[in-house]
Length: 221
Image (tube, rainbow, N blue to C red; front, side, top):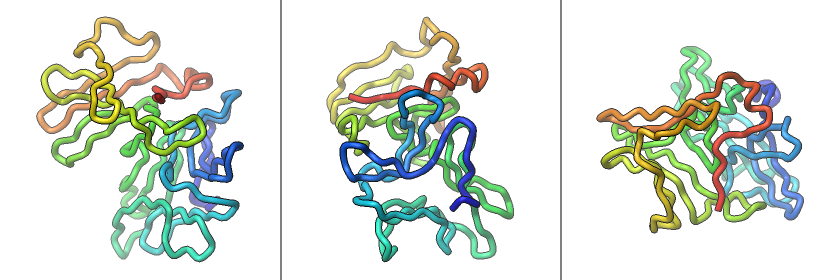
């Protein structure tokens, strides 16, 4: 695993141990912050119980996480297809994006930015891809020490003028003003792309130094 998972300067990828329980998770967080700030969790609904667990790329080219030694059924997998004459590797980018890349063509076949949890990082898209049938949105944790999918979500309403809706289950809890917003968010440049095939929101920061004390759009209950 050490040969395939690269340590970044600003993030780490490893098993996350909760102090209040024996549950273990594969997560990404900023390690420079005084308090560990998790920005993505792979097996958020399927914690590993106890001290066992392994992460590796299997013979089919998938990054898989197992919760026990028998390795019969993974608790999480990238679930992608790789050609027989090719292989892939996992990389954790400085942006916080965990990607799977084919070794021959260097094509990205899977990335964590396509599977957001409760945090939007700079460069991560939130919105609807009508062509691929993908809706990227944020979902809350169940509690402070349980990253399982909670009741609250934030997503773009693709109908009419783009705006964010906050839901409690299926009930609308709040909404943003329609785009374009009158006020920018300080140092962060907000961008909405509204095209026939997709509509999405992302933001950028001037440089990586702004991430030292901040870890994306974090969403919880």
